[in-house]
Length: 172
Image (cartoon, rainbow, N blue to C red; front, side, top):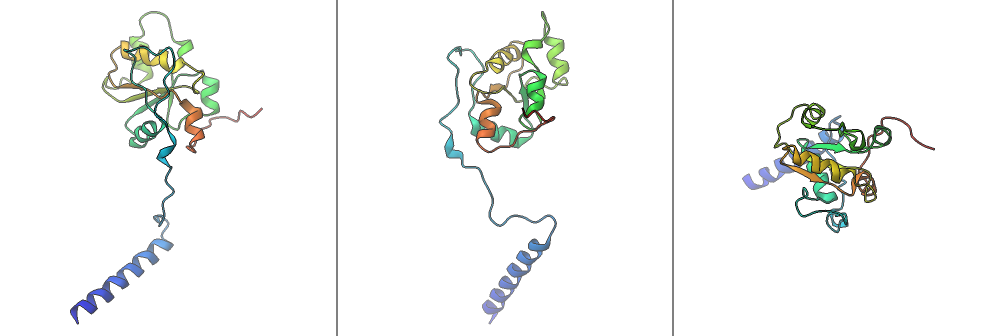
């Protein structure tokens, strides 16, 4: 008799829980829409990469780092390209417009004086763009110890169905 009552209570609890979730404004999806992680063949590494460069990461690692919300994502492209579509939450440090000479104060101010051991992912538009490689080298040279390069960049991010943040309309 006690087992039967426990089963009835369990069934009622499941029905109430599912029903409450169905009408809740903060409902949880019953079946998640997760990205397939089997689509990457590993990180894209440019032909001019050097042995002492910061490590390269693939789309799966980039997405994981982004989801932690602790990693700083830096788009190395010029401002116009950045505003047309960038990985959400990224900051823009256009490599081609960096000042000459000692970059320490410039990089510190761009990054908001974050700890030098904070995870950083540098990227640009994709395989044809090596701005991320050069910016990452500079960050490592100036003491940032957890710099990685996502050489697939914003194109690979979008190709895998991950949305871009668009700050202005750039069609045309």
